[in-house]
Every structure is written in C-alpha cells, then in structure tokens.
Length: 168
Image (cartoon, rainbow, N blue to C red; front, side, top):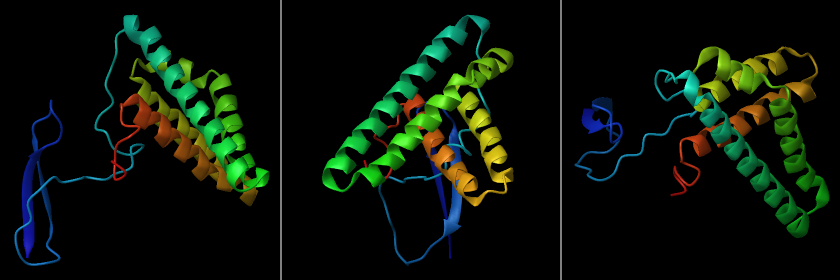
C-alpha cells in the first residue's frame, strides 16, 4: 500500500507531495517531521546583494561563536562528570573550527559567490571534507565526519533551528 501526503514545506513555500510506503494499516493524523541532513538539503542556494555581505558575515560569526561556546560548555561538563580526556574531544573540535574560520575561506567564498551564510558553510565544509577524506592517514580521515557535524550545528543555528528536530 502506498501513502501520499501533500503539505506545505514551510510558511513561505508551496505545497510538496511526499509519497511513501505504509508500514501499518489505518489512518494516521498529526504533525509530520521530515528529517534530512542540513548540509545536503535546503533547496537551491539563495543569492544576496553586495550590500548584504557584512550582515551575512556577522550572522556567520555569531553562529560560530555560539557553537564554540557550546563546545566549551560541553567540555567543562564532560570533564566534571567523566574525565578530561573525553572533554578534550570537544576542545579539539573547537580548535578545528577556529582554525578553519581563521583561514578566511568563509569570507572569501561569501564575497565571491554572493550566497547566504548557510550556502557558504555547506560549500566550504564539503570542500574541506573532501580534503580530509583524501588523506591516507585514518586518524585525519576520521576528523572529516567531525567537521561535517560542526557544519551541521552552524547551519542549524543560521536557520534558527538549534532547538529543532527530534529533540523538540
């Protein structure tokens, strides 16, 4: 049996039809949650004007700072409740993110492409992911997934969804 649902994607979009397979007979009504990777979904990138570049950079910096603060909080909590070695993972993630932001690649990409901060984060982190994946050292290659996790956090914040998803 197949099921078809038509629903608005968000407040500004037209309706979208979703088709799937029923796993149980009957009728189900309620809120539908469409779960996807924010680095791979989100539609076509939105263009911005030259006058909006500084605003987008400020949004990106604000979300980066919030993500770094959250990582620091996690590290302190893990260190207090478990051990400092495990807390070091969160600190290392913070350093990786700081280093990546310091390259200036986010700003260069934003100024060159005139796309939103969300699109820039997706582009830059996917490029870095490919670089990490190409390295023969397995420890460095494992950091590629960490990099994408950090990017997901930033994109959610940029979209105003830091408390969204299944947790909500």
